[in-house]
Length: 205
Image (cartoon, rainbow, N blue to C red; front, side, top):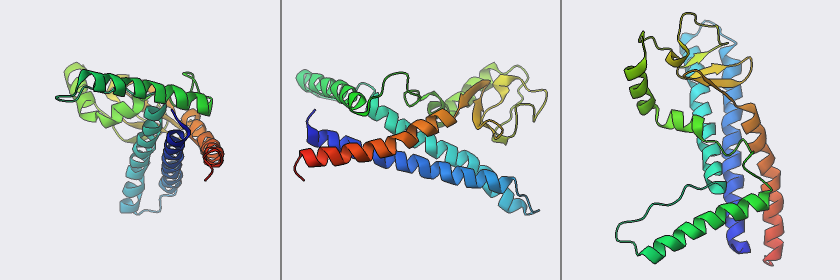
């Protein structure tokens, strides 16, 4: 992968990282606003919803970053020649390896997992699974509070749940720590800026 292409992907990593951090800033503002209830239910409901919208936004951008470093293998296009498809597969694999090495990342990075993003992105499928497996057909979604905020629920009956005491996100009994992912994204911005400048100098720009 040549330096010009590396610079293109590095710039995209920087952009997606900034988008993700902007979402975290909005999430923090929404959390603060939900804790300052002044009797205005419309305002409270707006910021309550913003907590989950901004969490989803952050995870979407974090997933975009993840796909740059750990890309899924491309699917064969209709009528695509086998050799062209093979070339695309090889480029995708090499692109991921090259950028991981450039950013000094490995598979232990919290950026790699896209599980929580997939839960939110394919929420209809998760609801289908809940509807076919829930024993008592209880459900709680878009909840903000500690794990014991609502009693009597099976863990699998809790959908989107944000715990502000730990900044963890819960989904159907699984807990996902957001802070390590936020930290990892935050560290990408200065790294990408430094690499961008270095690659630009190398290209003589």
